[in-house]
Length: 627
Image 1 (cartoon, rainbow, N blue to C red):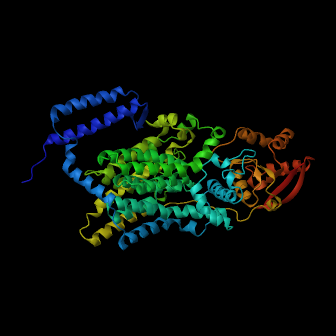
Image 2 (image 1 turned 180 degrees about the vertical axis):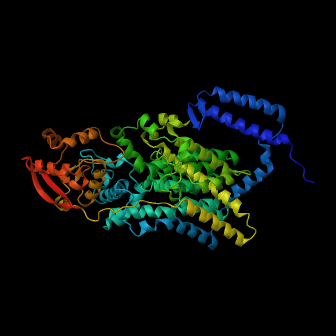
Image 3 (image 1 turned 180 degrees about the horizontal axis):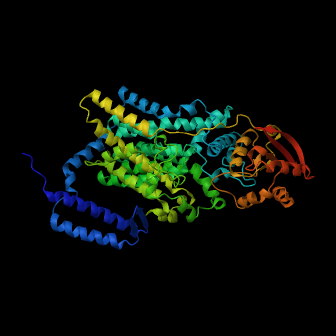
């Protein structure tokens, strides 16, 4: 007869959980973190570490009285946990080889990730908006140009003249630029190359999540579910305009290879881990910094759980990973440090504006077709529509339920830390990160930590999918369950992307522009500046204009004053900045009616000489020389 577990066991387990949470909260708050959270009408304020410390003392006293001698978390079964952890360690230490079946499931996940992207695949020059996608094309083209012509000034953009190293005013996307270089050097359209890279990240993301989930769970079908969810991640769709943020597929690989390095420490496993972390940094500095925060609790849990000791192999692995990360990461870190004073940091007020709240994770963004007509999005904020999808949430909850493994605990810890960091100034730890860690003072949007929250949730979903798939009594039933899970993900996470045409031709006046000129282009406004930067890829003249993550000192003042051009003193100011020519593009004016009068006045100015004129997109364009 099976003996029932004593009722006190569940109570002791609950007390242990409360004790762990209270102690962790007290420690975090003692280090300086503070926070206030609102869950509907309930307000939780964390201001003083003494309160959670007192809770911990009281809970410990009760636990001691009723459960003296009982192991920690008794409901989870200590012996079974130990055996599962040992089996998991061996699985990561000696990974299985990929069979033909495994490769088929990987291919299925990759193909599924591009099902909804066919409209963009067949219209490769279209863009979701004429801003960031065009900016990405310029970045890739400028990197290729500098690499071919002036590699010693690799980060010298042609914007914000006379400022230098202006590629460091935003994420330079070095990894993407290296991949794009041979195509752009061969004469390919930078916008087509940029879009192709963006679309390629979807099957690559699906493959990375498949590979990681398969290695962790040992189940290729569960890995296929994770791959589909990763390839259709709402974070990717929300940031469809941001090429660099599409490259977060290094995050799941970073977690896997960190565990691999700790399970089988050697210089080889350390080099692999360091290369992945560095690749994430070079692809997106935002995500590179965030990945290190996400992996910190994973490393701590794995080291403690596996009783990692300071062996020669572990020392070699850590040293090699650090060396590779620093060596490759310095490609961008050094130029950024040199221009740090020019860029300055983000104000705490700006960071606060771009911080998420817990309720942001319930806000569905406008590109999720299944939720387009469900709920009111009028109060949603940009970059804070962080709903990860109901399918990942449900499967993730199933995967997190006991019995647990090191990976599920590590994913929960890393995901929880990333969740708090995404809250920025509304959370517990971001104030200290902003104060003491220099890269965080240059980051504008803490809410982008949601990429790592999604990473943890998707990998937990693989564990949940494995449990659901195990309900199938035979291969056919498991295949049917897999099909249902895949269909649910495809239906719920279907994107509705608002693609639009980008002009196929460039204004004819640029045929008269040479690389030794310095152009001031009118109008000087945000969206037109992206167009001027893209136009410059055919002539590479320097621009007074620019659009990026940062602005040089005095630039925003110039932009405001140029609304009153051709005021005589503004022409003097342009000369001081080195401008040799002025262009006018009537199509790009926010108020097109202003353009004819401006051209008429400029034609009458003796300081300006008309060099070239024409029409572009049914509007007047002019090029003037400043005498």
